[in-house]
Image (cartoon, rainbow, N blue to C red; front, side, top):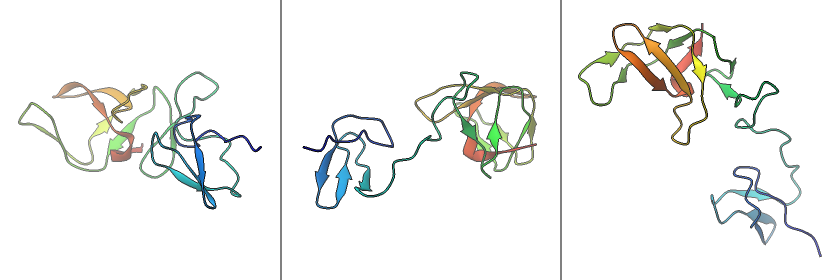
Length: 122
């Protein structure tokens, strides 16, 4: 009997075969039985122990990098906005379940978390 592979998206062990596809009941991800599973996902940790995070253009980010915001972002709980083109220095990569994987301080606003999909490496 063939053992079911772990889900390539969420690493859940409880996957099952449905026709020619594998299905994960935890995250609803489906993939082909004959497709090779990815060796490293975007959320795996790098050798330094930080989660691997990429900017909007696919460039890898690391703690200490500078990034530029590519879209106007509303600040939750405040009437201010982070304008597109704002440069943010000395970011920290954090592991967060809500998708905000960059912790930083922005001049005039203060400490906040950003999603990597709204920044590009400077």
